[in-house]
Amino acid sequence: MDKLIIRNETEKDFLTVENITRNAFWNVNVPGCDEHYLAHTMRDHEDFIPELDLVAELNGEVIGNVMYTKSKLIDELGNIKQILTFGPISIQPEYQRRGYGKALLEHSFKKAAELCFDVIVIFGNPDNYVSRGFKSCKKYNICLDNGTYPAAMLAKELKAGALDGRKWFYHESSAYNIDGEKAREFDGQFEKKEKKHTPSQEEFYIHSHSVIL
Image (cartoon, rainbow, N blue to C red; front, side, top):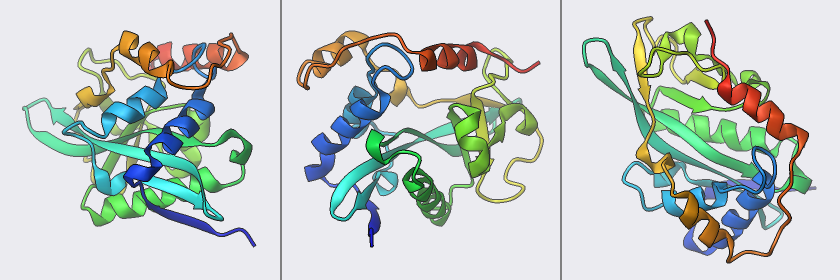
């Protein structure tokens, strides 16, 4: 019987996790990807939360990972609410659609609540996250600084009523601001893969450029 263990990432997992992240995202959102470089740099950022850096290990093999950072919501009076953002989350392609990503996320939600965080905001495909309890940011009155409600910006309450209906402006961690040239240099350390256009990239473009009115 398969045995799935979810545990904290250790230094010996770093390269494995970066390879898994690269494999999971390659040609999915854009030709190639840079999410593995994001995983590499995020670990050293001040907003990174080591307690929520988790790997899924199946029968002794690491097959997935999720990483979290601190982020924040600011209301119209300048009050700040500390929240979470996760990503990248990745499952090795041959193990996708088998429930391992769900198990990894649900474990992370429980652990985040134990650390007294009560809200998560992410950018992602709603098809992947609505079943995990995420809702449109507009339903929680969370927008960007420019007042827009991106269709891909989703929120989840880890504690019912944590978001009280007031207007919030979401501020993502600077951990996600990576240098594209450095990402390309970093990718050169890995096995060469062909970059190509795929239908999923058009889906990503539509989601990432859509707003809710």
